Each structure stands twice: as structure tokens, then as C-alpha cells.
Image (cartoon, rainbow, N blue to C red; front, side):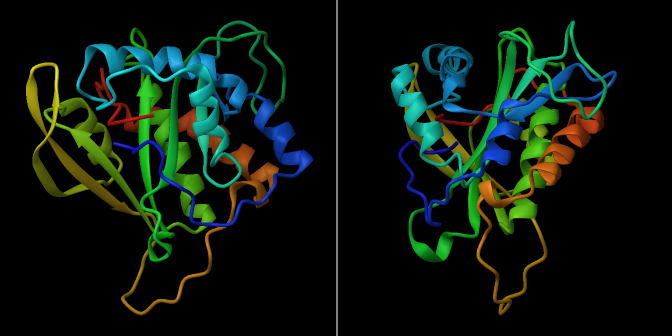
Length: 258
């Protein structure tokens, strides 16, 4: 359940022109129902439209008012050169073969996934909080799995060590999705949120992104904008072609605030 307003803990580094071109391109795989690409602030309207029903009609997000488009842009822009935001678009007509970059006017955005700093204090900087949201009507399609596979692989390449997800309970679908990707529950905060007439627990699920020993001195996590664009593209292609290995019946996979 990613907490709005969490501040970054690694220095902001500008992305290169090549990375920005990779962000704007769509990455598809022949036979895949989705294209995956890195998000940009121009996706704020689509992301907001996916997120809004979770705010207004469910306890999955503890926000009670839908954020304005400008606020969504701020949330994306505050971390997007450092941490991944990924959107899934419908492959539909006009898809090309794997690896081709192409432009499609306003393809439907089916879902998004992202990472945020787990906490602001410096010693936490190797840990991230993750979330995924799927457009209502696109549930049970495996979109959440495509997105999470790409997100977690990129975070591992960047050098992050732990991924954590807060899930407002009960939410069997989100628990199933996270556990399919190796997350395990490490605790439940009881009755910490009140929404839609009920108190709700929040469980925390955690997954190691790489092996860590107690005294292992880690390298600093790499900013997303410093990764080779070709490597980022390959992760997105691979996830779009094989994410259905992790497909679950996940009608409401999201876990928290945008």
C-alpha cells in the first residue's frame, strides 16, 4: 500500500535522451495481449482513471478523494528517473513484432505498476514499496502479472534488495498475486484504517530481490535513468511474453495509495 508523499532517498539523476526514447516507445511481443512501456507524466490522466474507482468504491486504497491530474503528475515525476513506473497497453491492432518501437495513438492503458521508496531515512534506501493496479474490466487477464514481473526484475537489476507491499485486508486476490511472485507475509497491523463503514487491517508482504547477508556492504542502487535502454526494453519484452506464467484470478490486485 504505497504511501503518498514518500520522498526519494537516492540522488535524482536525469535520464538520457536514449532512455526517454525508450520510455516513449511501446514494447510488444508477438502473441502477447499487452505492450509494456515505462510511464511518463503524460500518462497521468489514464493512470488516474484506473485508480479512481479504487479510491471511491473500495478500501483497497486508504485515500478517500481521487487525486487531481496535476497531483498524479507530481507523484510520477517525483521518482520516475529513479524508480520504475510501468504501464500496460492493449496490444490490439497495429502491434508489430517483438522488439520494434512504434507509435500508436492513445492505445488503452489497462494497468500500471510502480515502486516508491519504502521510507525516507537513509538506511532504508535499498528497500522499496510496490503496487499494481488493473483497470476494472481488465481483471483476470494477467495484466497485473505482466506488470509485476517487469517491475520486480527492473528493481533487482537496479540493485534494490527488498520489495514490500502493504495490502488492506481482506483482499485474497492481491495476496494471491503477491505470493505467486514470492512475497511472504511478515506481519499484520490490526484495525489501522477506517473506510466505507469498517475498520481494516493492513498486512505487509515482503520479497527479497537478491540475496543479502547480515554484513554484506551493498552498492548504491542505480537510478532507472542510468540503465542501458536496450536492457530495459528486453525486460519489458520478456515480461510481456511470459508474464502469464504467473497469471492469477486477480480482480483487484492493487494494494494502496497511488
